[in-house]
Length: 518
Ligand code: MSP
Image (cartoon, rainbow, N blue to C red):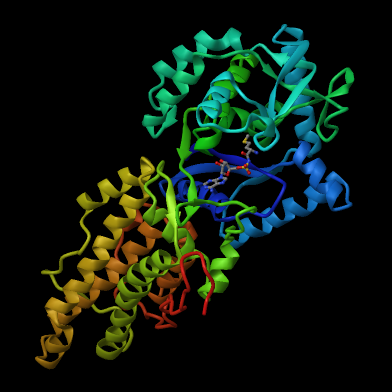
């Protein structure tokens, strides 16, 4: 019986194409999805675009188009990019979809009916970039840092408010009790501190200032703004409330992948909304750090935006797996990561082109040369290079989102296999006619490559599929099961398919980090 697993990412603002920071989040989520399928779970994986708000409205106007036409274009770009990155989402949700409107209206009405949403005058400093009013604490931090507060709009208007303060104690108890709700755990204190200054939040705007949003039911002068709309996507995505079978199966989410900048909304507003609506709370928020370019924030105004396609072109990559690999291997989950071209090239060359690529190539060449391209038989003395006991830490690393550590263990096997060749010298065994021993050595390495293909599949699906098919397997690696790693062996007699190197060495000459090819 497969166990259901509901996984979400943040939904991305539909005001520009995704860059490597957004890609980082969806790649991490895809690794979680693929790993969980590998260990036998039925995964529902949701991602999508957050399409309402003042920024979209303004950008559309500047481009002389309608907000709807503009978000249609951006959503399509996201879908194409996610396909390009081999993302295996089950549904791509857009907050402009009709079923989402129904969900938001229904929730809204429930909260109004029970007195959790009320109307009042509000005055505050509004940050259009974050689409939120600044909290007192943020204002104080900005003042302490000598920032000019006039960059924020002072907004006074009649708004609807969500009675967040009512849920403060309940949220506090929940966060204190559920140690694994916020992962990695070190981020929990930050949220508990923010709870101290909790006040009710404005959840609508007057149509005089913003019209691009879901209209407030029974009040055409207001639109719902913005977190109730955005956060509810996780309910719409799974078919709440009509699709009761699916809701029962998958709700609540097991893992919600988000960046550290939107933790407060997911760890405070979101649980409060669900508590108010009497809906069970998610199991965990998986909070990642920020990707920078050479330690500099990625921003359009700085002109340092890099997209996955830029990297593919810059390094003439045959597919996107080196990008998936690099981010998962180099950034410990939860920490910030700094991208540089030099680092990318060095890591990809060392691990994928040299270590793994060469292992495959030399092993298949020897299989061809010494055994006519057929997987050799092994003797009773044969020993596998990867033992069952060694798989447990890897599974634990994946299970606990320590992707970099899982990868480093797997690459350790690849090192071991390369060393095994160097020490055993198959060419000498062949020359000396020790064919039985030669068979053991080649078989051990072929089978190690088979195991590595499954182990690394969540991170580099395309690359490992190439290895898998070069090893001669017909069955699709997408169908693989974690138990195959040590529960089967490469079939003796299987014909290997020596092909192109899985990844040519990246040779591009780079000028400065984040720079262009010479
Ligand atoms: N629309 C809101 C989220 C609503 S979720 C109900 C939003 N959108 S966003 O496009 O600004 O960000 C989407 C996700 O991308 C967030 O989790 C954010 O942390 C992540 N990232 C944006 N830039 C990033 C980096 N430079 N590095 C890593 N992740 C980044 O917030």
